[in-house]
Image 1 (tube, rainbow, N blue to C red):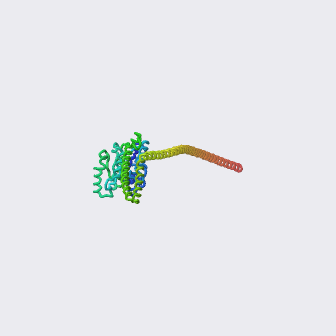
Image 2 (cartoon, rainbow, N blue to C red):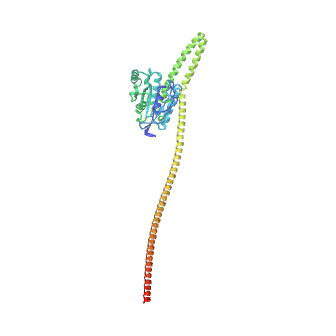
Image 3 (cartoon, rainbow, N blue to C red):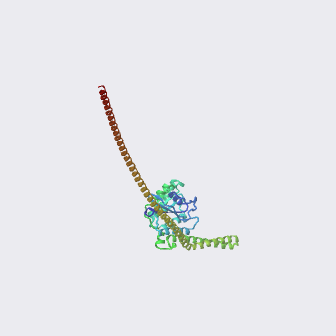
Length: 396
């Protein structure tokens, strides 16, 4: 099913916030789940569509920007490529869910960085399609959870809640996931800021709001590393003055490591562009492969339909021929029955004629016998009279 009844919803948040668990509960999928704060989602992945309130819902699982196996550069390239590529193919998001652990003691730097990148990806115009979903309520006392919920509403999430986003609780059941999704399934699909920037405005990913935020974070990291290097150099100078060769070598190794990290951070923008292009090409190849597969399947389906149509026509022809045969057989049976009935009537008429002839013959025989009897009696009476006449003449 496609069109207005088909919707897509992205699930975002920090690693270990329960994104994949939520998706599996809602859709019946079996995506791998991490059992700790380590990430288990290293790629953007979409569920098979499932039905909810007459809609075909597809959920999109995304890795967090604190992923333990990939850098923030890799994650932004991956998410940017997926969102721009699917947008180019006509797919928009009806909603975005941001997962947050109510069990977190405080909102730390990692959560802040994740949420900041989330805001830069979405932009301001799509916030009415955003849900902040708190979960893991079973891991905290209810009064403590409610207190943290109020703090989040009044502080950390206040900015987007004031602009139309909503905050809901996930209770860890499929019923709860579906209740949450029902807030989004009737939304008008919206264009995210990064989709608008990459596709409509043809910006380089580094020039997007999310790319600029990542650059700012990377520059801060680079500056902190440079500050550390400056301090290490001072410590190494002191070790040289003190002729502490062991400490000097250790500091030298640390400085070398920091220099490598600084150099890597300086190259991250170029790597972001390259990773974005690579991820997009990889995704395009996957989409083309899927489309080719669907095309081949469509050809197979068309061939099967043609074969079924041929078989159906053949069966209809055989059915017509069978009906004609049965109709002819019924006609022959009726004709045979008529012939048999005619023969029976003819036989009956012949029998009646023969009976009549027999009766007539019997009557003729009876009459003949009667005539013979009468003639015999008449002949016997004349003889007696002749005898009597002779006797009388003799005596006289």
